Amino acid sequence: MAATVDLSRVIFIVLREMRKPILAIIIVYSLSIVGMVIIPGPVVDGKAQYLSIFHAFYFMTYTATTTGFGEIPFPFSNAQRFWAIVCLYISVITWFYAIGSIIRLVQNPYLGKALAEHDFSNKVERISGDFFIICGFGDTGSVLARGLSDARLTAVIIDSSEERIKALQLRDYKVPMPGLFADASVPKHLIEAGIRRTDCKAIVSVTSNEETNLKISAMARILNPGIDVITKSKVEIWEETLATIGGKVHIIDPFKTYAQLLAFSIVQRYFYSFNNWLVGDKSTEIEQPLSPPNQGLWIICGFGRMGQEIKRALNKQGLRTAIIDPQPISPDEDNVDKFVLGLTTVRTLKLAGIEQAVGIVTGTDDDGQNVSILLNARSINPNVFTVVRQNSHENFAAFQAAKADMVMQPSLVAARRIMLLLKAPLLKPFFKYFLVHQDRDHEMNDVISWMKTCVGDKAPLLTSFDITDKNAKVLMRVLENDSVQLGDLLKDPRDRTKPLDLVALVVQSDEGKVIILPGSDYLVKAGDQLLLCGTDLGYRLFLATVNNEYKLYYVRTGLRQPRSFFMQWYVRKMGREGL
Image 1 (cartoon, rainbow, N blue to C red):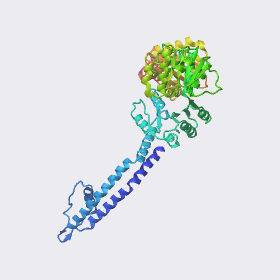
Image 2: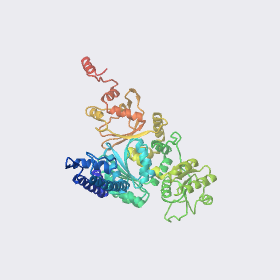
Image 3: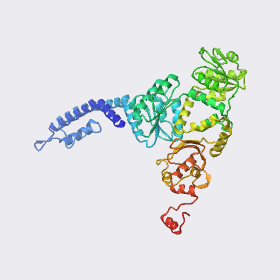
Image 4: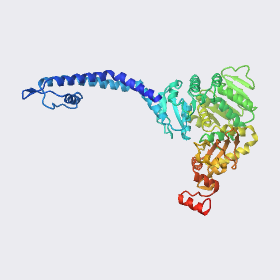
């Protein structure tokens, strides 16, 4: 429907711009042809010769376009030659006028926009599987699009910046990523992006404007009440409003998310490295977990939204905090060991107690200032644990050279959180299982060693798999009359004595029951959702097993089921199940 509307707009713009030139050409051609037909030609045998309508049209066709000139089917009379001269000049002028109109039409921004929307709608209609809508292609949106592409998940992108959409078209994504330069808060553009389609699984709003994110989320809920809404918000009042629009809404606050990540890292020393490894951070050393200090004083430089969230998270872990900020803090702010008013300098750092501090957080909105604070803090206390905020991705090289213990980039934190929500929603109960009980450190270490052996140094493939007719047709057919163990599905269909480079971290049944690290004897059921982690090859072999009756039979029984008609007949005759 959207593509038809866009095509109608294109036709309307073309007709509006070309109406006068087309009418002028028609009138000039008509008068010229009529003149050539009624003007008498040379006299032959006492009878004047006249051009037929066909010959007159043929003559005007190559004369008006200046492609040639010739007197056919007989030499013209002087009157016809005079009329031909008049027609030639007038038609050439008319064609110049028409060509100028065509050039203006091509340069018309409304036509370009209509054509782009029409092309965009066609690309969206050609998407055959599940997809997501991303509104905003800034730092967060571009990182998210790259992550979805690597996971071979399709997304439709809308952004209000033409330059960003042009940059999108130059990216080498593994799957189609249609992009549209438009205002995503306009319902028409969301409809063009396919929000009303049943295979549109979620809409992600990550623009730089909080109000726009709220509007997009509200419009999405109205246009498709059943769709998952994921939106980025850094302002508490907007988060409260977003939570009331109804349906399934995920509000991603990068500051709150990172504060929780820091707190969890203090509780579970493998958590931070394992989390980053799962999202594909190549710089993560999973075998050397990062352990922020769990006792002592932490200094927070900059008490904005990030500073406030980190203070709350540290206080919940029983850690003491000191604050440095140029603005006075609220007198109701509790659990603050010391507050130093002013910019962060060597003097204010010493007043806050940097010599005795175990950790420092530089959380201002200025990258240069954050790096400067980091250097000053290290010059006084070289052993202090450093957490630094990176606001712009363009400053990556500087922060990499600074070698902070933890770098917080809001756009990257939000993108990774959203990425895990989209492709691995069961990861939340998995981590909760380890974080609720602090004595499960060794258990997580075993999981990490197990997965490291399977995956190696490569970035792991993390994905959700639903046991449905769409995804596992053969397995579903077997489950109707028989049972299948999870361990069998994770065997190599080429040699069942070897396991696949794939592990099941979580199983969630159709009734909602969650099992963390299910055993190999777990009996899979229709409707189960699996959280799988491993290699791309391992996952492809797994898909081959659940969708091929011969491979599934082999991994379950160890027998090669005959495929040809003759061998099947022979096996039946011999009274055996397989060869």
